Length: 353
Image 1 (cartoon, rainbow, N blue to C red):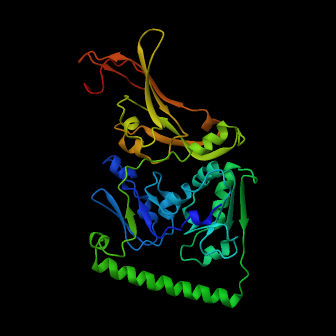
Image 2 (cartoon, rainbow, N blue to C red):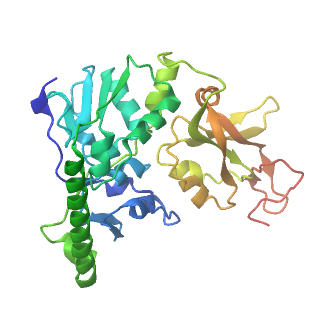
Image 3 (cartoon, rainbow, N blue to C red):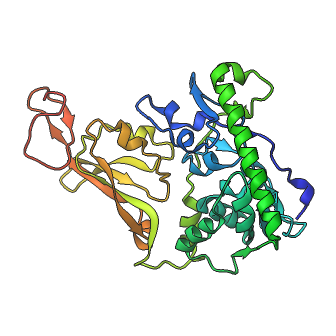
């Protein structure tokens, strides 16, 4: 691997076009703002702005549509099919050839699976003790526990826990310095919040977010995992669950809003001809394309889409799932065709109701 082909990012890249709040005015996602420890994010005039970003990576791993990125674009530019070694930028124990990210907190399990699909093998160096002393306060072992759900063979993903040998007095000094840094940062940010607003700060040189003008497209983050199963590179255990919930539909008039606005086309509506020559419509759910953004639930006019229990690996690969079915009906009042789920003897379309 050519170490010179990668440069650690020094800013937060923002793809506002990816945000579901721009896709529909009914969306009300605020996960990134709720998680940001520095309260550095603001959504104004259909664009995200970041001020005093610490590059901790929480917004990167939490956003379902990939609106925020730090090291991810550079990782995707690396040559494929070459083993990848990843570690924290503060890790002095990892090999010199390992790529040092701003913070491993930005690596979700699905992001690691995507990189694994591209490179074939990943070695991940984790330093829990170092993470505890860091201002980002990431729980390194938590990622290891999350990855265990996917049962990735060790010959594909190797996780090495490294514990630096620190003297007790050095630990105490580090903690004292950490608390002083946190106090100074909190005091500084409080003063800025009282004297400025995000619009003024965005034009200031300390603006940390870099807005990308390119038309962004949300990536189906579960797709590499589905490819592993489809190619039989990962075994499918029918009884084991994945951290993905099944979707159910209690009622549907096949208006198409969820299918038209789904950022990854995880929901589709198909029209088929039955043996009786009466057209039928089906609402289909593709779990391998879903990113769990909740937009479909927020825009459903009947509010009848909801999450159910976690899917098993077998349910995940058996795609698509039929959520609703209906044969064509003719409204007795307006004469227009309509579809309705669940089936009933009703002869009046929802609009005439």
